[in-house]
Image (cartoon, rainbow, N blue to C red; front, side, top):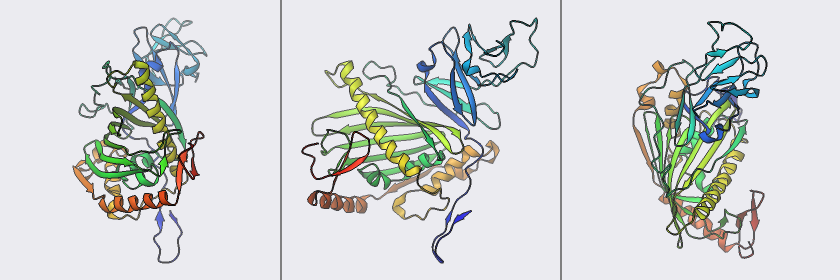
Length: 395
């Protein structure tokens, strides 16, 4: 299918989103949030899942509906090491086998439901999805974050938002999209490099702030720089190590940016932040910094969401050199949507690309200077939206 254009103009090509869901590890959230003694329902992969903890605290994930008569297990009760269906009290263990039927003298030998392969790492719960039903390869896993559990760091903040009307690929495209950081996220990307290899896609970036935009309510723009080393491990889980510096403050943090598909055209976007405590900083102060940082990340995601929900899905983007290796990234991403034996060398071979940002940054700095001179200023309001202002003095 194509979107019609004038004769001789580039025609936008688009296709329906894939009907299958990506093969790989998907984060469902913070592990402790599932250990409240109750079953938790998760809409994911076009179905409903139920998450529950047994008597030892071990987490299990099953299909959300009882194969007996279709009862909703997420409305059931955790009894011992099993989840009990609210309809007839059939008990299901974490291995997917029926653990008992109170009113029956025996359990049918075929009484099983799907038990999803799980992984608990970095304080988060993951499930493995594979349309072919294969277990996760040993070399495809989620790396451990050494800072997690270190008393010099805060615990995770955690936030989520349902993105409706958009496919997961839209967020992954951002890995190689240098220019949108200026226009959507209001920063100068002064260095930008991508490395794609195997099941990982990395982005190395340094950036500086824009003086004509106030991104945080009440915090006036100032000169600050940051360095980011981010990588997707599989189709949906990114770890981003961040270092920021201003004339008065230095900070180090770890950002998680992850998602899981709900339907082919919706996904649950999640993010969490850990912050390293500065000398003399109390736990309360560090947690406040982490919360403020997470709120800043939320602003950025809201800016992305507005773009995603109003853009056309485009298979043949018309690119310039500074747009980054979008086609190569999409080829890398395709490996998660085909059977394992259809993954080609081109999808997983090492690919590096460094963008020369000098011309772009010079143009953007001139634009910011013009905006400052003309008082064309923007600040984010309490409503989370950008508003034009004549001065930051009263902000």
